[in-house]
Length: 179
Image (cartoon, rainbow, N blue to C red; front, side, top):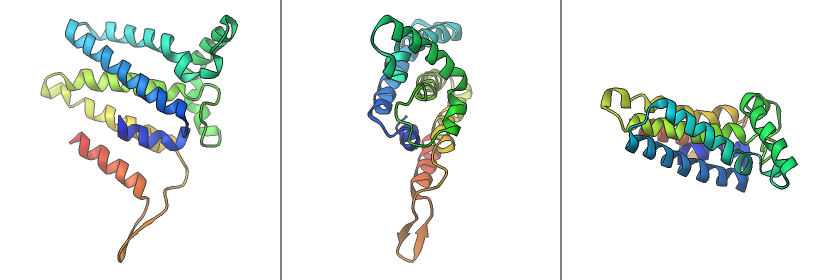
């Protein structure tokens, strides 16, 4: 999750993003642990995730809409719109987006749903547990694919120069943790 957050940092670069990552990851771990402990089905896990998005969505993904009930209702509408169009909107705005409108909603989905799914799969038998790997790689890929259009500055290492050192470190770290 840390590598995914580092990969997505250039998109957001805000304290709101850091709060979202912390809340979503902790909540996802709690949901996954509860579902595993109670031996609930995937449908119950999905319902818990949907409820969690409704409860924490406005405070962490659309924080500008906290306040009176009318603002909160507009925030819920923006949360729903962000689930559908937030991904596209990330591609059309200048980075970093910070907490602009509902553009934190895709990050909420990535860190809440991705973490829950990865943990639930990883805690299963080895054969199906391997399905957690593409989820974790996709979480890191979110930041790399929706992030900056240019790569980090080359890093000279003696006679060699490492191109895109930040992106390379994230990629190697993700692959290493996947193994």
